[in-house]
Structures are given as C-alpha cells and as structure tokens.
Length: 282
Ligand SMILES: Cc1cc2nc3c(=O)[nH]c(=O)nc-3n(C[C@H](O)[C@H](O)[C@H](O)COP(=O)(O)O)c2cc1C
Ligand SMILES: Nc1ncnc2c1ncn2[C@@H]1O[C@H](COP(=O)(O)OP(=O)(O)OP(=O)(O)O)[C@@H](O)[C@H]1O
Image: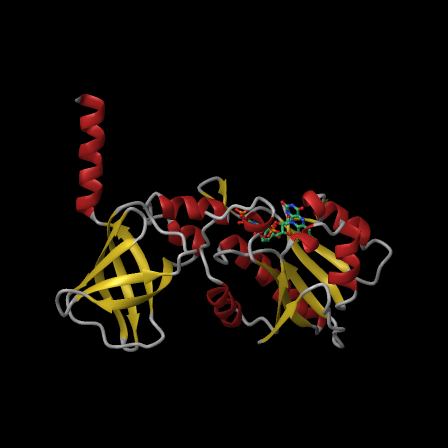
C-alpha cells in the first residue's frame, strides 16, 4: 500500500484513476468496513485502483480545539488496518485550520478532481468543507456534469442504532466491552509499552496518551505476543496509571504489544453494582 501525505502546498498529480472512499474512519468499524468493501468492489468491477482519503489530526482537535479528544486508533494503527484491508493508496490529508476553511467546491476541485478520483464513496452522513457545509447531496450535484461519480452508503446499524466511532468511544470509556465486537468487528485494542513491575509477572503499562481508555477498574485483557495471545488482568486508576498482571512473564518485544480489552472483570462489575445499590438503597 502506498501512503501519500497531502497538504495544501503539495497535492500530487495522480497518473492513474482510482475509486476513493473518504472519511476520518477512527477505529475502522463495521460501518466503515461496509463502505470500504463497496469502494473495493467498485474498483475491481471498473478495473481501477482502490484508494482511501483520511485526515489527521481529528477535526475536533483542530476546529473545536478539544485537547481532551481521545482516539480509537493511532495513525500507525489506522495505516496498518487499511493495509490489511487491501487498499492500494492511502491519502492522509493534513487537517489544519487552513484546510478546514476550504469551501466545499474548493475541496472537490483540489482533493477529488485534481487527484484523479473517478468515483468517490462516502456514507449517508458524510460532511466536508468550511463549517461542514458540504454533504453527500452536494457531492452528487457537483459531479453531475463531471467525469467522476459518487456512491453513498446507507446507515449500518447494530441494535437499532448507527454504528459510529463516537458510540464505540463511549462504550470504551464506560468499560462496556461486551458489545464492542458487534460494532468494531473485533475487540478494542491499544498499543502499549511495558516496564517491569514488582514481580516477574507484574508490569507498569504505558498507552498512547491520545488513546481512549476506560474508567477506573479491573479489566480482563489479551496481550498479543509472537506465539499467540496471553491473558492478563489490567488495573486502571484515574484513567491512566495502569498495572498489568500476567500468569506467566511476557516475552520481550521492543515494538511494544497489542493489548485487547475483553471485559470488565466480574469483581469490578460486582463492586460497581454494590456501590450503586448502596447509593440507591442506602
Ligand atoms: C475541506 C474540509 C473542511 C472542513 N471544515 C470543517 C469545519 O470548518 N468545521 C468542522 O467541524 N469540520 C470540518 N470538516 C470536517 C468534516 O465535517 C468531517 O468531519 C470530515 O470531512 C470527515 O468526515 P467524516 O467525519 O464523515 O469521516 C472539514 C472537512 C473537510 C474535508
Ligand atoms: N454506520 C455507518 N453506516 C454507513 N456509513 C457510515 C457509518 N458510519 C460512518 N459512515 C461513513 O463513513 C465515513 C467516515 O465516517 P466517520 O469517520 O465520521 O465515522 P463515524 O463513525 O460517523 O464517526 P463519528 O462518530 O466521529 O461521527 C463517512 O463517509 C461516514 O458517512
């Protein structure tokens, strides 16, 4: 997979035409995957390359200056996932205030037409351009007299609600991991580095400060090592300080580990229930 970083001063002229999916795609959840599958199928049917345009950092961090915004995926995790999904070209567009102030028609001209996209695939609620003024309808109007086309994907739901990155972030934050695979297609995981703790099987864990983490409590986790997965118990205190206890020591890994959250530990759930009952019944 080719990764191309775009900023306003450097928009490369792409020789080959391509079918391009557009969106932020935090977590690459099952709604995103449906959209990406549609784009891949179109590209295969028409004999074009398959590309994705994403943005970095998240618009919330830039437009709303929300420094407490937390991601489901770091950019390297997203790049790795896109690679696994068979994308030919990944455009990572720098999202800054200059870019955010582009009018929808300017975005279409520079970031769709000029980079030679022959077909664009977006979801039903995609927005773009200054103050999110552009939407899927506008894209359809824009392409009506043009050599490129637009496909709009309808809402993919789980339990009657739209699958969305925001919904999954809220599930993670509240420690409700059991229904996450139905939305994400897999367990929620973060990349971590570990320092040795008090004993051979005890570690201090460092996650990316921008990663979404659950509320304080104990969690059953699976750590991926070269021979498979190992179970452990993770303690989160005040959203960050994390301790990990394994049954057997982790083998060394200089690149860190992928750690998947399986469930909130039954004890933590029981304690939370007991605390709630105390509050309700005294
Ligand atoms: C050219 C451009 C300008 C944008 N300007 C704004 C903006 O002014 N305010 C805003 O909240 N979001 C802005 N966005 C972010 C979009 O509303 C949207 O979040 C982004 O295109 C990703 O789409 P998605 O959230 O559907 O994945 C802009 C996006 C683009 C492509
Ligand atoms: N459940 C869904 N069904 C169909 N399309 C979707 C779905 N969720 C997102 N999309 C589309 O995928 C692209 C990327 O969307 P985006 O990154 O905003 O995801 P999101 O889950 O809606 O995020 P957020 O919760 O932050 O709004 C957009 O074109 C969007 O319309």
